[in-house]
Length: 148
Image 1: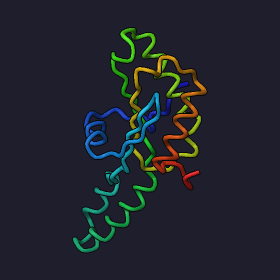
Image 2 (image 1 turned 120 degrees about the vertical axis):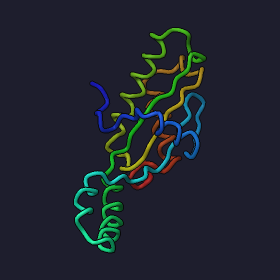
Image 3 (image 1 turned 90 degrees about the horizontal axis):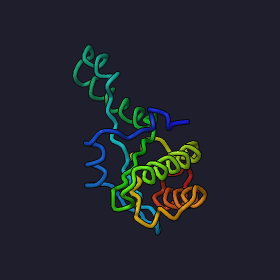
């Protein structure tokens, strides 16, 4: 079972913004980059164009706050050939990380952009180690609801 499309980070611009502005947390096998998502109100633009300008800016401010709380958190994985030259090994690590993130997804607060950078030592890890380290990173970055 794959990660839901709404929770996938795919745009190059999002990855670039994360690496420029995002905070960084590390464990021996993984590094997490996290950034609070900026709200992009696309559905509200059409309805706001019919309002007077003062009312439109006030409504847009309210819509932005509401939209930001409703944006799903999105996750991407960065794994280089330094980890392993074999694509089979890199893909197995990506599948394990996606499964671990999918398990932790209900605890994750909405509106975050996340990138997991895999370190070369990760080839020795199993799924439960990835799950434990990912949970530790998300708590450290205060991404969980209530910061468990």
